[in-house]
Image 1: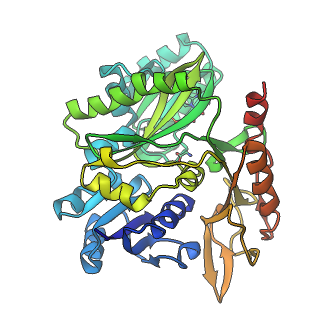
Image 2: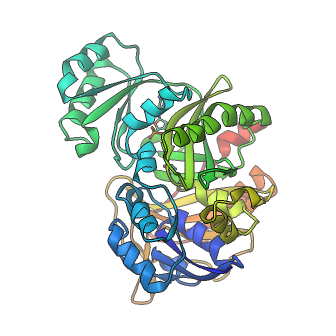
Length: 428
Ligand code: AMP
Ligand code: GLY
């Protein structure tokens, strides 16, 4: 029953998933590609090109890997899952047809409309309809949102307050200067005003598990100001999610999505991340992702107490209905430390000093780090995640920040307000 696992990716999300897998009694051996210095202690890091399906398959055959867990979306869009399946290797992550839920906003919006899944109203335009697009923008109500249809690494969504700004963004998207080919088709969307929530499921194609929800903090600045980043922090659970709202989300969003996939004959094994806007207690899908979120995973997976290896095996064997997910009632808070200047330009290769010991309710997940001459140094914008488990939100916030003070590198920046908004709202 024990299996060999490969995790694909090397950020905090993959570190958190691999950490749980390494503790599984069903995990014979664990590889991670590329991994990071933090995963060296419990997995074997592999330096391969993870967006080359053939290279991933050859690696799996070489190491006798049974199950591959794909962290990021890019390998999925490149067909890594298709190639693994063709070679009889189980994979947690959809084939290309399913990955379009994230890889093409045109596909996702059309899918949502077809299966009556609530989402912001929208129109598509491309280079051949640019005049219609401008006419539409002239008459539209502001703010509104322009989205590049393709994968744009977080840079493809722009909220516009005025016609002039929207027109300029539209032109830059359609002529390829803003996000390259991803902007060939643009979605113009109604602006939704509410609060955001990340919900996650894992499905084997027949059954699904609802994973803990989370809230992430995307902007660089405190009070959700400044440019978007890969994610500056996360919290799980989100107490604003009442049992009634959760039921509404299951009925109006999750189940229609799964039955839509079946009707489209997309055999989907993997995670689905529903990026939701809650407007007057009703959920709207802002986006689908075909993977877990980063840094939501760091909070969500840290809370899972059941065996994650068994969970993935249950997906591979299409018997997820037999798996019982257990989650601690404790709250997890993740604070991401970045290099000053990120998401713009920043300096790398700063020496990082970590405390000698880590309490049992604290987890350090690496993101942009590497080892050079026996010294841990920074190697990216997002450098390290600190996740703390606490008895409640206030306790978890306190622990995460207190421990974070002990992590030292010279151009370190982090938001000081992760979870503060929820603390206020939950006490109302
Ligand atoms: P997306 O990649 O589509 O989730 O968009 C990135 C971020 O832009 C979301 O997390 C929201 O904060 C914001 N956003 C996207 N679509 C809308 C919308 N229709 N109304 C308001 N905010 C939006
Ligand atoms: N935290 C948002 C994302 O992973 O896309």
